Image 1: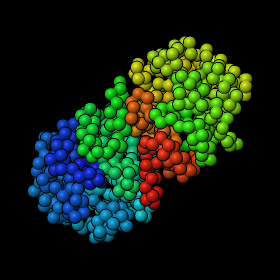
Image 2: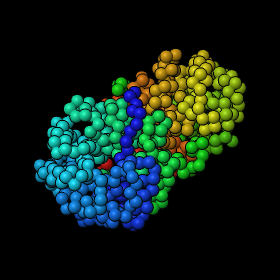
Image 3: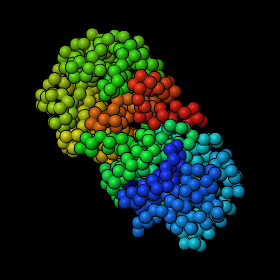
Image 4: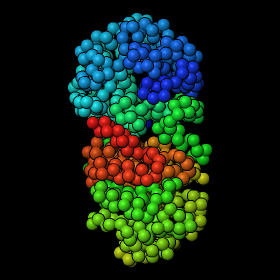
Length: 303
Length: 303
Protein backbone atom coordinates (compact mmCIF):
# COMPACT_ATOMS: atom_id res chain seq x y z
CA UNK A 1 0.00 0.00 0.00
CA UNK A 2 1.30 3.40 -1.03
CA UNK A 3 0.62 5.76 1.89
CA UNK A 4 1.24 9.49 1.36
CA UNK A 5 3.17 11.43 4.01
CA UNK A 6 0.57 14.15 3.99
CA UNK A 7 -2.91 14.79 2.64
CA UNK A 8 -4.91 17.99 2.21
CA UNK A 9 -8.48 18.16 3.42
CA UNK A 10 -10.97 20.49 1.83
CA UNK A 11 -13.65 21.06 4.47
CA UNK A 12 -17.01 21.38 2.72
CA UNK A 13 -19.34 21.14 5.74
CA UNK A 14 -20.46 24.79 5.84
CA UNK A 15 -21.51 24.57 2.18
CA UNK A 16 -22.18 20.97 1.08
CA UNK A 17 -23.20 19.96 4.58
CA UNK A 18 -25.49 22.83 5.50
CA UNK A 19 -27.18 22.97 2.09
CA UNK A 20 -28.49 19.46 2.69
CA UNK A 21 -29.52 19.85 6.34
CA UNK A 22 -33.15 20.32 7.21
CA UNK A 23 -32.56 22.49 10.25
CA UNK A 24 -31.81 26.09 9.30
CA UNK A 25 -28.89 27.67 11.11
CA UNK A 26 -28.70 31.37 11.94
CA UNK A 27 -26.03 33.43 10.22
CA UNK A 28 -24.34 34.00 13.59
CA UNK A 29 -24.18 30.23 14.21
CA UNK A 30 -22.67 29.61 10.77
CA UNK A 31 -20.01 32.23 11.44
CA UNK A 32 -19.23 30.78 14.87
CA UNK A 33 -18.89 27.29 13.40
CA UNK A 34 -16.66 28.39 10.52
CA UNK A 35 -14.47 30.26 13.01
CA UNK A 36 -14.23 27.08 15.10
CA UNK A 37 -13.22 25.14 11.98
CA UNK A 38 -10.56 27.77 11.20
CA UNK A 39 -8.94 26.99 14.56
CA UNK A 40 -8.66 23.21 13.98
CA UNK A 41 -5.71 23.40 11.62
CA UNK A 42 -7.80 22.99 8.45
CA UNK A 43 -6.18 24.93 5.62
CA UNK A 44 -9.26 25.11 3.38
CA UNK A 45 -12.93 25.74 4.15
CA UNK A 46 -15.73 26.07 1.62
CA UNK A 47 -17.90 28.43 3.59
CA UNK A 48 -21.04 28.96 1.51
CA UNK A 49 -22.64 29.04 -1.92
CA UNK A 50 -23.49 32.13 -3.94
CA UNK A 51 -26.28 30.45 -5.87
CA UNK A 52 -29.62 32.25 -6.05
CA UNK A 53 -31.43 32.04 -2.68
CA UNK A 54 -34.41 30.60 -4.54
CA UNK A 55 -32.42 27.41 -5.16
CA UNK A 56 -30.73 27.02 -1.78
CA UNK A 57 -32.61 29.11 0.80
CA UNK A 58 -30.44 27.67 3.60
CA UNK A 59 -27.44 29.58 2.22
CA UNK A 60 -29.21 32.83 1.29
CA UNK A 61 -27.02 34.66 3.83
CA UNK A 62 -23.85 33.85 1.84
CA UNK A 63 -22.58 37.42 1.73
CA UNK A 64 -23.19 38.03 5.44
CA UNK A 65 -21.35 34.81 6.28
CA UNK A 66 -18.42 35.70 4.03
CA UNK A 67 -18.17 39.16 5.57
CA UNK A 68 -18.73 38.00 9.13
CA UNK A 69 -16.10 35.30 9.61
CA UNK A 70 -12.69 35.88 11.15
CA UNK A 71 -10.15 35.12 8.46
CA UNK A 72 -7.27 33.09 9.79
CA UNK A 73 -4.05 33.69 7.84
CA UNK A 74 -3.07 30.58 5.87
CA UNK A 75 -6.63 29.34 5.50
CA UNK A 76 -8.24 29.43 2.06
CA UNK A 77 -11.92 30.42 2.22
CA UNK A 78 -13.79 29.15 -0.82
CA UNK A 79 -17.39 29.36 -2.03
CA UNK A 80 -19.55 27.74 -4.66
CA UNK A 81 -20.21 30.09 -7.59
CA UNK A 82 -22.87 29.31 -10.21
CA UNK A 83 -22.54 32.31 -12.52
CA UNK A 84 -21.24 35.84 -13.09
CA UNK A 85 -23.74 37.38 -10.69
CA UNK A 86 -22.77 34.92 -7.93
CA UNK A 87 -19.12 35.70 -8.56
CA UNK A 88 -19.74 39.42 -8.12
CA UNK A 89 -21.26 38.79 -4.69
CA UNK A 90 -18.41 36.40 -3.82
CA UNK A 91 -15.83 39.02 -4.73
CA UNK A 92 -17.66 41.52 -2.56
CA UNK A 93 -17.41 38.95 0.23
CA UNK A 94 -13.66 38.58 -0.23
CA UNK A 95 -13.67 34.90 -1.17
CA UNK A 96 -10.22 33.35 -1.91
CA UNK A 97 -11.25 30.56 -4.26
CA UNK A 98 -14.16 30.20 -6.65
CA UNK A 99 -15.67 26.74 -7.06
CA UNK A 100 -17.76 26.06 -10.12
CA UNK A 101 -19.83 22.93 -10.61
CA UNK A 102 -21.37 20.68 -13.20
CA UNK A 103 -22.32 17.04 -13.65
CA UNK A 104 -20.74 14.39 -15.82
CA UNK A 105 -24.18 13.07 -16.76
CA UNK A 106 -26.56 15.11 -18.89
CA UNK A 107 -29.72 14.35 -16.90
CA UNK A 108 -28.22 15.18 -13.51
CA UNK A 109 -26.73 18.37 -14.91
CA UNK A 110 -30.12 19.44 -16.26
CA UNK A 111 -31.92 18.60 -13.00
CA UNK A 112 -29.29 20.34 -10.89
CA UNK A 113 -28.41 23.38 -13.00
CA UNK A 114 -31.35 23.58 -15.40
CA UNK A 115 -28.97 23.66 -18.36
CA UNK A 116 -27.46 21.13 -20.73
CA UNK A 117 -23.78 20.30 -20.32
CA UNK A 118 -23.15 22.20 -23.56
CA UNK A 119 -24.83 25.29 -22.13
CA UNK A 120 -23.04 24.97 -18.78
CA UNK A 121 -19.44 24.95 -20.00
CA UNK A 122 -19.39 28.58 -21.32
CA UNK A 123 -20.87 29.81 -18.01
CA UNK A 124 -18.11 28.04 -16.09
CA UNK A 125 -15.54 29.47 -18.48
CA UNK A 126 -16.80 33.00 -17.88
CA UNK A 127 -16.84 32.56 -14.07
CA UNK A 128 -13.41 30.96 -13.82
CA UNK A 129 -11.87 33.42 -16.28
CA UNK A 130 -13.22 36.43 -14.38
CA UNK A 131 -12.30 34.89 -11.02
CA UNK A 132 -8.71 34.34 -12.16
CA UNK A 133 -8.49 37.91 -13.41
CA UNK A 134 -9.62 39.02 -9.95
CA UNK A 135 -6.77 37.00 -8.43
CA UNK A 136 -8.79 34.07 -7.13
CA UNK A 137 -7.82 30.44 -7.51
CA UNK A 138 -10.43 28.19 -9.10
CA UNK A 139 -11.82 24.73 -8.49
CA UNK A 140 -14.40 22.71 -10.40
CA UNK A 141 -16.71 20.04 -9.06
CA UNK A 142 -17.55 17.31 -11.52
CA UNK A 143 -20.53 15.41 -10.08
CA UNK A 144 -21.83 11.90 -10.87
CA UNK A 145 -18.38 10.67 -11.95
CA UNK A 146 -18.95 7.31 -10.23
CA UNK A 147 -22.64 6.97 -11.05
CA UNK A 148 -25.73 9.04 -11.77
CA UNK A 149 -29.08 8.64 -9.98
CA UNK A 150 -30.84 8.95 -13.38
CA UNK A 151 -28.47 7.53 -15.98
CA UNK A 152 -26.65 5.09 -13.65
CA UNK A 153 -23.39 4.37 -15.49
CA UNK A 154 -21.46 7.39 -16.74
CA UNK A 155 -19.03 6.52 -19.58
CA UNK A 156 -15.35 7.21 -18.88
CA UNK A 157 -15.03 8.91 -22.29
CA UNK A 158 -17.55 11.50 -21.15
CA UNK A 159 -15.58 12.09 -17.94
CA UNK A 160 -12.33 12.50 -19.87
CA UNK A 161 -14.00 14.93 -22.28
CA UNK A 162 -15.25 17.11 -19.40
CA UNK A 163 -11.92 16.95 -17.55
CA UNK A 164 -10.29 18.18 -20.76
CA UNK A 165 -12.80 21.01 -21.05
CA UNK A 166 -12.40 22.07 -17.41
CA UNK A 167 -8.60 21.94 -17.39
CA UNK A 168 -8.58 23.87 -20.69
CA UNK A 169 -10.40 26.66 -18.82
CA UNK A 170 -7.42 26.85 -16.47
CA UNK A 171 -9.12 25.27 -13.43
CA UNK A 172 -6.57 24.86 -10.61
CA UNK A 173 -8.19 21.77 -9.11
CA UNK A 174 -10.87 19.34 -10.21
CA UNK A 175 -12.92 17.54 -7.57
CA UNK A 176 -14.33 14.23 -8.80
CA UNK A 177 -17.64 13.58 -7.06
CA UNK A 178 -19.28 10.35 -5.97
CA UNK A 179 -22.61 12.14 -5.81
CA UNK A 180 -24.78 9.14 -4.98
CA UNK A 181 -22.26 7.56 -2.61
CA UNK A 182 -22.02 4.30 -4.52
CA UNK A 183 -18.41 4.31 -5.70
CA UNK A 184 -16.40 1.26 -4.71
CA UNK A 185 -12.62 0.75 -4.49
CA UNK A 186 -12.37 -1.27 -7.71
CA UNK A 187 -14.24 1.46 -9.60
CA UNK A 188 -12.09 4.19 -8.04
CA UNK A 189 -9.02 2.33 -9.20
CA UNK A 190 -10.42 1.91 -12.73
CA UNK A 191 -11.43 5.56 -13.11
CA UNK A 192 -8.17 6.92 -11.69
CA UNK A 193 -6.14 4.47 -13.72
CA UNK A 194 -7.46 6.12 -16.88
CA UNK A 195 -7.48 9.73 -15.69
CA UNK A 196 -4.00 9.71 -14.15
CA UNK A 197 -2.52 8.57 -17.46
CA UNK A 198 -3.85 11.78 -19.02
CA UNK A 199 -3.77 14.39 -16.24
CA UNK A 200 -1.33 15.05 -13.36
CA UNK A 201 -2.46 13.49 -10.08
CA UNK A 202 -1.92 16.82 -8.28
CA UNK A 203 -4.78 18.34 -10.26
CA UNK A 204 -7.48 16.13 -8.71
CA UNK A 205 -9.38 16.05 -5.44
CA UNK A 206 -11.74 13.19 -4.59
CA UNK A 207 -15.16 13.88 -3.14
CA UNK A 208 -16.73 10.78 -1.63
CA UNK A 209 -20.00 10.26 0.15
CA UNK A 210 -20.38 7.58 2.81
CA UNK A 211 -23.91 6.59 1.81
CA UNK A 212 -22.94 2.90 1.65
CA UNK A 213 -20.03 3.04 4.12
CA UNK A 214 -17.27 2.94 1.50
CA UNK A 215 -15.85 6.47 1.81
CA UNK A 216 -12.67 5.57 3.70
CA UNK A 217 -12.13 2.42 1.62
CA UNK A 218 -12.35 4.57 -1.50
CA UNK A 219 -9.99 7.15 -0.03
CA UNK A 220 -7.23 4.68 0.80
CA UNK A 221 -7.57 3.30 -2.72
CA UNK A 222 -7.19 6.81 -4.13
CA UNK A 223 -4.23 7.51 -1.79
CA UNK A 224 -2.62 4.31 -2.97
CA UNK A 225 -2.81 5.75 -6.50
CA UNK A 226 -1.22 9.05 -5.53
CA UNK A 227 -4.21 11.28 -4.73
CA UNK A 228 -3.60 13.55 -1.73
CA UNK A 229 -6.56 15.95 -1.75
CA UNK A 230 -9.92 14.94 -0.30
CA UNK A 231 -13.18 16.75 0.34
CA UNK A 232 -14.89 15.97 3.64
CA UNK A 233 -17.50 17.42 5.96
CA UNK A 234 -17.08 17.96 9.71
CA UNK A 235 -19.26 15.45 11.56
CA UNK A 236 -20.38 13.99 8.24
CA UNK A 237 -22.83 16.91 8.11
CA UNK A 238 -25.19 16.89 5.14
CA UNK A 239 -27.59 14.17 4.12
CA UNK A 240 -27.87 12.33 0.83
CA UNK A 241 -30.26 14.28 -1.44
CA UNK A 242 -31.24 11.02 -3.16
CA UNK A 243 -31.93 9.10 0.04
CA UNK A 244 -33.37 11.20 2.84
CA UNK A 245 -32.11 9.83 6.14
CA UNK A 246 -29.03 8.28 4.58
CA UNK A 247 -25.46 9.44 5.06
CA UNK A 248 -24.01 12.01 2.68
CA UNK A 249 -20.55 13.53 2.85
CA UNK A 250 -17.59 11.60 4.19
CA UNK A 251 -16.85 12.78 7.73
CA UNK A 252 -13.70 14.87 8.16
CA UNK A 253 -13.42 13.37 11.66
CA UNK A 254 -13.24 9.80 10.31
CA UNK A 255 -10.69 10.74 7.65
CA UNK A 256 -8.47 12.56 10.17
CA UNK A 257 -8.61 9.71 12.67
CA UNK A 258 -7.67 7.14 10.02
CA UNK A 259 -4.82 9.30 8.76
CA UNK A 260 -3.49 9.91 12.28
CA UNK A 261 -3.49 6.15 12.93
CA UNK A 262 -1.76 5.49 9.63
CA UNK A 263 0.92 8.14 10.19
CA UNK A 264 -0.40 10.46 7.50
CA UNK A 265 -0.16 14.15 8.32
CA UNK A 266 -3.32 16.25 7.91
CA UNK A 267 -2.40 19.29 10.00
CA UNK A 268 -5.78 19.06 11.73
CA UNK A 269 -6.26 18.64 15.48
CA UNK A 270 -8.75 15.77 15.90
CA UNK A 271 -9.89 16.89 19.31
CA UNK A 272 -10.69 20.42 18.09
CA UNK A 273 -12.38 19.03 14.99
CA UNK A 274 -14.54 16.73 17.11
CA UNK A 275 -15.52 19.68 19.30
CA UNK A 276 -16.65 21.53 16.17
CA UNK A 277 -18.56 18.40 15.08
CA UNK A 278 -20.27 18.11 18.46
CA UNK A 279 -21.15 21.80 18.33
CA UNK A 280 -22.82 21.55 14.92
CA UNK A 281 -24.53 18.27 15.91
CA UNK A 282 -26.15 20.06 18.83
CA UNK A 283 -27.32 22.83 16.49
CA UNK A 284 -28.83 20.46 13.94
CA UNK A 285 -30.57 18.46 16.64
CA UNK A 286 -29.89 15.13 14.93
CA UNK A 287 -27.21 12.51 15.45
CA UNK A 288 -24.56 13.10 12.81
CA UNK A 289 -23.14 10.11 10.92
CA UNK A 290 -19.45 10.53 11.82
CA UNK A 291 -18.38 7.28 13.48
CA UNK A 292 -15.66 9.01 15.48
CA UNK A 293 -18.03 11.66 16.76
CA UNK A 294 -20.39 9.01 18.13
CA UNK A 295 -17.45 7.08 19.61
CA UNK A 296 -15.94 10.21 21.13
CA UNK A 297 -19.18 11.04 22.89
CA UNK A 298 -18.28 8.18 25.20
CA UNK A 299 -15.37 9.31 27.32
CA UNK A 300 -14.01 5.78 27.46
CA UNK A 301 -13.58 5.45 23.76
CA UNK A 302 -10.21 7.11 23.32
CA UNK A 303 -8.74 5.27 26.29
CA UNK B 1 -5.61 -4.34 -5.89
CA UNK B 2 -6.03 -8.06 -5.49
CA UNK B 3 -9.78 -8.76 -5.42
CA UNK B 4 -10.94 -12.27 -4.54
CA UNK B 5 -13.58 -13.96 -6.69
CA UNK B 6 -15.52 -14.98 -3.64
CA UNK B 7 -15.57 -14.29 0.08
CA UNK B 8 -17.25 -16.11 2.97
CA UNK B 9 -19.25 -14.19 5.52
CA UNK B 10 -19.64 -15.42 9.06
CA UNK B 11 -22.82 -13.79 10.36
CA UNK B 12 -22.36 -13.01 14.05
CA UNK B 13 -25.38 -10.76 14.63
CA UNK B 14 -27.48 -13.20 16.70
CA UNK B 15 -24.55 -13.69 19.10
CA UNK B 16 -22.09 -10.78 19.00
CA UNK B 17 -24.83 -8.35 18.01
CA UNK B 18 -27.54 -9.32 20.47
CA UNK B 19 -25.17 -9.73 23.41
CA UNK B 20 -24.35 -6.03 23.15
CA UNK B 21 -27.88 -4.71 22.55
CA UNK B 22 -29.76 -3.11 25.40
CA UNK B 23 -33.21 -4.21 24.28
CA UNK B 24 -33.91 -7.83 25.20
CA UNK B 25 -35.40 -9.93 22.44
CA UNK B 26 -37.81 -12.79 23.07
CA UNK B 27 -36.66 -16.29 22.22
CA UNK B 28 -39.33 -16.49 19.54
CA UNK B 29 -38.04 -13.28 17.94
CA UNK B 30 -34.47 -14.55 17.94
CA UNK B 31 -35.59 -17.76 16.25
CA UNK B 32 -37.62 -15.86 13.65
CA UNK B 33 -34.64 -13.61 12.90
CA UNK B 34 -32.15 -16.47 12.61
CA UNK B 35 -34.58 -18.25 10.28
CA UNK B 36 -34.78 -15.09 8.16
CA UNK B 37 -30.98 -14.96 8.03
CA UNK B 38 -30.88 -18.63 6.96
CA UNK B 39 -32.93 -17.68 3.90
CA UNK B 40 -30.60 -14.89 2.72
CA UNK B 41 -27.92 -17.19 1.31
CA UNK B 42 -25.60 -16.88 4.31
CA UNK B 43 -23.72 -20.13 4.80
CA UNK B 44 -22.71 -19.53 8.41
CA UNK B 45 -24.59 -18.08 11.37
CA UNK B 46 -23.31 -17.84 14.92
CA UNK B 47 -26.64 -18.12 16.67
CA UNK B 48 -25.93 -17.74 20.38
CA UNK B 49 -23.49 -18.13 23.25
CA UNK B 50 -23.46 -20.91 25.82
CA UNK B 51 -21.75 -18.83 28.46
CA UNK B 52 -23.31 -18.79 31.93
CA UNK B 53 -26.51 -16.70 31.93
CA UNK B 54 -25.03 -14.70 34.80
CA UNK B 55 -22.47 -13.20 32.36
CA UNK B 56 -24.72 -12.59 29.37
CA UNK B 57 -28.36 -12.61 30.50
CA UNK B 58 -29.49 -11.57 27.00
CA UNK B 59 -28.46 -14.98 25.66
CA UNK B 60 -29.66 -17.13 28.58
CA UNK B 61 -32.10 -18.87 26.23
CA UNK B 62 -29.23 -20.32 24.16
CA UNK B 63 -30.51 -23.89 24.26
CA UNK B 64 -34.08 -22.93 23.37
CA UNK B 65 -32.80 -20.88 20.43
CA UNK B 66 -30.58 -23.71 19.21
CA UNK B 67 -33.43 -26.20 19.43
CA UNK B 68 -36.04 -23.83 18.00
CA UNK B 69 -34.51 -22.70 14.72
CA UNK B 70 -35.22 -24.30 11.36
CA UNK B 71 -31.94 -25.73 10.14
CA UNK B 72 -31.37 -25.02 6.49
CA UNK B 73 -29.17 -27.62 4.81
CA UNK B 74 -25.82 -26.17 3.84
CA UNK B 75 -25.81 -23.59 6.61
CA UNK B 76 -23.36 -23.98 9.49
CA UNK B 77 -24.89 -23.02 12.83
CA UNK B 78 -22.21 -22.05 15.33
CA UNK B 79 -22.20 -20.92 18.95
CA UNK B 80 -19.76 -19.39 21.40
CA UNK B 81 -18.58 -21.94 23.97
CA UNK B 82 -16.66 -20.86 27.09
CA UNK B 83 -16.06 -24.24 28.76
CA UNK B 84 -16.91 -27.93 29.04
CA UNK B 85 -20.31 -27.24 30.60
CA UNK B 86 -21.24 -24.82 27.83
CA UNK B 87 -20.14 -27.38 25.26
CA UNK B 88 -22.43 -30.01 26.76
CA UNK B 89 -25.41 -27.68 26.36
CA UNK B 90 -24.29 -26.77 22.84
CA UNK B 91 -24.09 -30.45 21.89
CA UNK B 92 -27.58 -30.95 23.27
CA UNK B 93 -28.64 -28.05 21.05
CA UNK B 94 -27.14 -29.68 17.97
CA UNK B 95 -24.59 -26.95 17.20
CA UNK B 96 -22.38 -27.55 14.13
CA UNK B 97 -19.35 -25.50 15.12
CA UNK B 98 -17.88 -24.59 18.50
CA UNK B 99 -16.29 -21.17 18.83
CA UNK B 100 -13.92 -20.59 21.71
CA UNK B 101 -12.56 -17.19 22.67
CA UNK B 102 -9.71 -15.43 24.40
CA UNK B 103 -7.85 -12.14 24.22
CA UNK B 104 -4.35 -11.41 23.00
CA UNK B 105 -3.82 -9.00 25.88
CA UNK B 106 -3.59 -10.22 29.46
CA UNK B 107 -5.73 -7.47 31.03
CA UNK B 108 -8.59 -7.77 28.55
CA UNK B 109 -8.54 -11.55 28.93
CA UNK B 110 -8.78 -11.26 32.72
CA UNK B 111 -11.57 -8.67 32.55
CA UNK B 112 -13.49 -10.66 29.96
CA UNK B 113 -12.94 -14.27 31.10
CA UNK B 114 -11.76 -13.79 34.67
CA UNK B 115 -8.70 -15.94 33.98
CA UNK B 116 -5.12 -15.32 32.93
CA UNK B 117 -4.15 -16.27 29.39
CA UNK B 118 -2.15 -19.14 30.85
CA UNK B 119 -5.24 -20.44 32.64
CA UNK B 120 -7.45 -19.96 29.58
CA UNK B 121 -5.50 -22.02 27.06
CA UNK B 122 -6.08 -25.44 28.75
CA UNK B 123 -9.82 -24.71 28.95
CA UNK B 124 -9.91 -23.94 25.25
CA UNK B 125 -7.91 -27.08 24.56
CA UNK B 126 -10.41 -29.21 26.46
CA UNK B 127 -13.42 -27.63 24.73
CA UNK B 128 -12.00 -27.85 21.21
CA UNK B 129 -10.69 -31.38 21.76
CA UNK B 130 -14.05 -32.61 23.02
CA UNK B 131 -15.92 -30.71 20.30
CA UNK B 132 -13.79 -32.30 17.60
CA UNK B 133 -14.38 -35.76 19.09
CA UNK B 134 -18.08 -35.04 18.90
CA UNK B 135 -17.72 -34.24 15.19
CA UNK B 136 -17.93 -30.46 15.40
CA UNK B 137 -15.64 -28.06 13.60
CA UNK B 138 -13.91 -25.48 15.76
CA UNK B 139 -13.14 -21.79 15.59
CA UNK B 140 -11.25 -19.51 17.94
CA UNK B 141 -11.70 -15.80 18.45
CA UNK B 142 -8.56 -13.93 19.38
CA UNK B 143 -9.63 -10.52 20.65
CA UNK B 144 -7.64 -7.26 20.97
CA UNK B 145 -5.26 -8.23 18.15
CA UNK B 146 -5.27 -4.65 16.82
CA UNK B 147 -5.37 -2.89 20.18
CA UNK B 148 -6.52 -3.36 23.76
CA UNK B 149 -8.70 -0.89 25.70
CA UNK B 150 -6.44 -1.40 28.74
CA UNK B 151 -2.96 -2.17 27.42
CA UNK B 152 -3.30 -0.28 24.10
CA UNK B 153 -0.58 -1.81 21.92
CA UNK B 154 -0.44 -5.61 21.79
CA UNK B 155 2.97 -6.94 20.68
CA UNK B 156 2.99 -9.02 17.51
CA UNK B 157 5.16 -11.65 19.25
CA UNK B 158 2.31 -12.24 21.70
CA UNK B 159 -0.18 -12.63 18.84
CA UNK B 160 2.11 -15.10 17.06
CA UNK B 161 2.56 -17.09 20.27
CA UNK B 162 -1.22 -17.37 20.76
CA UNK B 163 -1.86 -18.21 17.10
CA UNK B 164 0.68 -21.01 17.52
CA UNK B 165 -1.06 -22.26 20.67
CA UNK B 166 -4.53 -22.15 19.09
CA UNK B 167 -3.51 -23.84 15.82
CA UNK B 168 -1.64 -26.48 17.86
CA UNK B 169 -4.99 -27.33 19.48
CA UNK B 170 -6.31 -28.13 16.00
CA UNK B 171 -8.56 -25.08 15.63
CA UNK B 172 -10.09 -25.04 12.12
CA UNK B 173 -10.30 -21.26 11.85
CA UNK B 174 -8.90 -18.35 13.82
CA UNK B 175 -10.81 -15.07 13.83
CA UNK B 176 -8.56 -12.07 14.50
CA UNK B 177 -10.58 -9.43 16.33
CA UNK B 178 -10.38 -5.64 16.21
CA UNK B 179 -12.22 -5.50 19.52
CA UNK B 180 -12.06 -1.73 20.06
CA UNK B 181 -12.66 -0.85 16.41
CA UNK B 182 -9.45 1.09 15.98
CA UNK B 183 -7.55 -1.00 13.44
CA UNK B 184 -6.41 0.87 10.35
CA UNK B 185 -5.40 -0.41 6.90
CA UNK B 186 -1.65 0.10 7.45
CA UNK B 187 -1.83 -1.86 10.70
CA UNK B 188 -3.89 -4.62 9.09
CA UNK B 189 -1.25 -4.91 6.41
CA UNK B 190 1.57 -5.03 8.98
CA UNK B 191 -0.09 -7.68 11.16
CA UNK B 192 -1.11 -9.89 8.23
CA UNK B 193 2.29 -9.47 6.63
CA UNK B 194 3.83 -11.20 9.62
CA UNK B 195 1.11 -13.79 10.28
CA UNK B 196 0.72 -14.93 6.67
CA UNK B 197 4.42 -15.75 6.49
CA UNK B 198 3.88 -18.25 9.30
CA UNK B 199 0.33 -19.54 8.86
CA UNK B 200 -1.79 -20.32 5.77
CA UNK B 201 -4.11 -17.47 4.82
CA UNK B 202 -7.06 -19.88 4.63
CA UNK B 203 -6.85 -20.43 8.39
CA UNK B 204 -7.79 -16.83 9.28
CA UNK B 205 -10.99 -14.83 9.44
CA UNK B 206 -10.97 -11.10 10.16
CA UNK B 207 -13.40 -9.58 12.63
CA UNK B 208 -13.60 -5.81 12.33
CA UNK B 209 -15.70 -3.29 14.17
CA UNK B 210 -16.78 -0.06 12.47
CA UNK B 211 -16.35 2.13 15.57
CA UNK B 212 -14.22 4.65 13.64
CA UNK B 213 -15.63 3.92 10.16
CA UNK B 214 -12.67 1.88 8.92
CA UNK B 215 -14.24 -1.60 8.72
CA UNK B 216 -14.60 -1.75 4.93
CA UNK B 217 -11.22 -0.07 4.38
CA UNK B 218 -9.66 -2.74 6.59
CA UNK B 219 -11.52 -5.50 4.79
CA UNK B 220 -10.34 -4.52 1.31
CA UNK B 221 -6.81 -4.33 2.69
CA UNK B 222 -7.18 -7.85 4.10
CA UNK B 223 -8.73 -9.08 0.82
CA UNK B 224 -5.81 -7.59 -1.05
CA UNK B 225 -3.56 -9.80 1.09
CA UNK B 226 -5.53 -12.97 0.39
CA UNK B 227 -8.02 -13.12 3.28
CA UNK B 228 -11.47 -14.32 2.17
CA UNK B 229 -13.35 -14.91 5.43
CA UNK B 230 -14.95 -12.03 7.32
CA UNK B 231 -17.19 -11.77 10.37
CA UNK B 232 -20.03 -9.28 10.14
CA UNK B 233 -23.34 -8.49 11.80
CA UNK B 234 -26.64 -7.96 10.00
CA UNK B 235 -27.58 -4.27 10.23
CA UNK B 236 -24.38 -3.61 12.16
CA UNK B 237 -26.27 -4.90 15.21
CA UNK B 238 -24.37 -4.68 18.48
CA UNK B 239 -22.81 -1.65 20.07
CA UNK B 240 -19.25 -1.06 21.16
CA UNK B 241 -18.86 -2.22 24.77
CA UNK B 242 -16.11 0.35 25.30
CA UNK B 243 -18.06 3.30 23.90
CA UNK B 244 -21.80 3.13 24.57
CA UNK B 245 -23.62 4.70 21.63
CA UNK B 246 -20.78 4.03 19.22
CA UNK B 247 -20.84 1.53 16.37
CA UNK B 248 -19.67 -2.02 17.00
CA UNK B 249 -19.67 -4.85 14.48
CA UNK B 250 -19.11 -4.23 10.79
CA UNK B 251 -22.48 -4.43 9.02
CA UNK B 252 -23.04 -7.50 6.85
CA UNK B 253 -25.20 -5.29 4.61
CA UNK B 254 -22.33 -2.87 3.91
CA UNK B 255 -19.88 -5.70 3.20
CA UNK B 256 -22.29 -7.42 0.83
CA UNK B 257 -23.09 -4.22 -1.05
CA UNK B 258 -19.41 -3.40 -1.52
CA UNK B 259 -18.65 -6.93 -2.69
CA UNK B 260 -21.56 -6.93 -5.14
CA UNK B 261 -20.34 -3.64 -6.61
CA UNK B 262 -16.79 -4.97 -6.86
CA UNK B 263 -17.81 -8.22 -8.53
CA UNK B 264 -16.98 -10.37 -5.49
CA UNK B 265 -19.36 -13.27 -4.90
CA UNK B 266 -20.82 -13.61 -1.38
CA UNK B 267 -23.77 -15.87 -2.09
CA UNK B 268 -25.99 -13.55 -0.06
CA UNK B 269 -29.08 -11.78 -1.41
CA UNK B 270 -28.71 -8.11 -0.39
CA UNK B 271 -32.41 -7.41 -0.55
CA UNK B 272 -33.25 -10.33 1.77
CA UNK B 273 -30.41 -9.38 4.10
CA UNK B 274 -31.66 -5.79 4.27
CA UNK B 275 -35.15 -7.06 5.09
CA UNK B 276 -33.69 -9.04 7.98
CA UNK B 277 -31.77 -5.92 9.07
CA UNK B 278 -34.93 -3.80 8.95
CA UNK B 279 -36.78 -6.46 10.93
CA UNK B 280 -34.22 -6.55 13.74
CA UNK B 281 -33.93 -2.75 13.72
CA UNK B 282 -37.66 -2.51 14.38
CA UNK B 283 -37.28 -4.98 17.26
CA UNK B 284 -34.40 -3.11 18.88
CA UNK B 285 -36.17 0.21 18.55
CA UNK B 286 -33.00 2.08 17.66
CA UNK B 287 -31.51 3.14 14.33
CA UNK B 288 -28.87 0.56 13.43
CA UNK B 289 -25.50 1.76 12.09
CA UNK B 290 -25.53 -0.06 8.72
CA UNK B 291 -25.12 2.64 6.07
CA UNK B 292 -26.94 0.56 3.45
CA UNK B 293 -29.88 -0.09 5.75
CA UNK B 294 -30.37 3.64 6.30
CA UNK B 295 -29.96 4.32 2.58
CA UNK B 296 -32.36 1.51 1.65
CA UNK B 297 -35.06 2.93 3.87
CA UNK B 298 -35.41 5.59 1.21
CA UNK B 299 -37.02 3.98 -1.79
CA UNK B 300 -35.10 6.23 -4.16
CA UNK B 301 -31.70 5.13 -3.01
CA UNK B 302 -31.27 2.03 -5.14
CA UNK B 303 -32.45 3.82 -8.27
